[in-house]
Image (cartoon, rainbow, N blue to C red):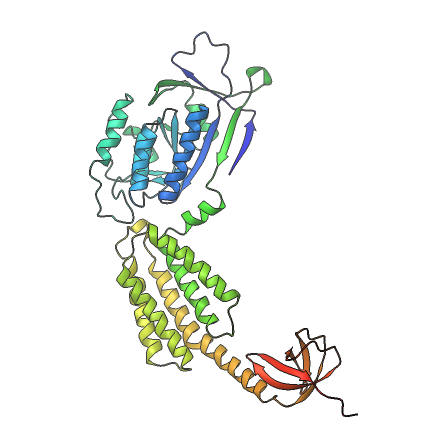
Length: 429
């Protein structure tokens, strides 16, 4: 998904070597890509696609970065790909309070130009993988450093603490400071930057009148709806909430006749959670404990009581919630408040709400069984279902044998869940 805007006040040209002798720079496409959240395989695959298309079009890529790091090796290896890009890649950590930590710092180091926004944070390098803080990636840093040397860039800077924007500039981690992308394009005017295809001089000029030339074609890109959803569910908090809500929806459906909207929604939520579990490392023992706890509470609901299974299941649910993602980094850790609210909400939902709903349904079904044999009237055409009026109340009826016209006297012959089975009452006259 992309949308193109012509910005009449900006002009950006990319000229190899010296611009001497040129009549004037032609418009250069600029791909502005927002990179928000952990660098998972969805983001890595998408940025690989953007870089490939930009190299084919000769475009400049601007990465608007705000990330705590990578999820697995995909995000880490992405830095090597950026270092080997044949077009300039400009990384901007912004707007404030954006950050570039872990593998995000590697992206900053691997880019042709590194920029920071006032109020942003750069570093630290560790942990590279926010899902496995203790994991190490032998050879990855050496490969990124080798790619930087191959294009004639400096050594890879390793940062062991969070840096403010000014500290990043003072230590040479960032090249320029800018509060916005247009300001950034103005500040990098005339810079000679490295790419895998050689050093390139960037010409960014502000077009204040039509005589100064055409504006720059800026393409704003994003993940698109499907990839945005998949990227959004790849965090412990999202997975946990999807599991809790999905299981609750299926539990509610188990108290109802048939399979309706709640069941379909529950399956969809659990499907998204299952995808997230393939991305984020999870303790399967903790996940099993969580599931068994919910199962015990559902069983107590069907036993029509608030007993040992509910309390034991709630304890298992709480323990499983705490264990499932215990080893992930602080940046994506499951909040204690989220777990606490889920435990309290589960107690109220399984211990009271579902039990009350099930008992109410049973009372209605019991009352309908008491209508068997009574005579009423069809208040609409039954073909085969429609409204019937029996014992002073409007019910939903189903014809047992062919259509029944509106106004026909009917007799209740049975109950199917919450629906009365009826048939026409013979006319005594």
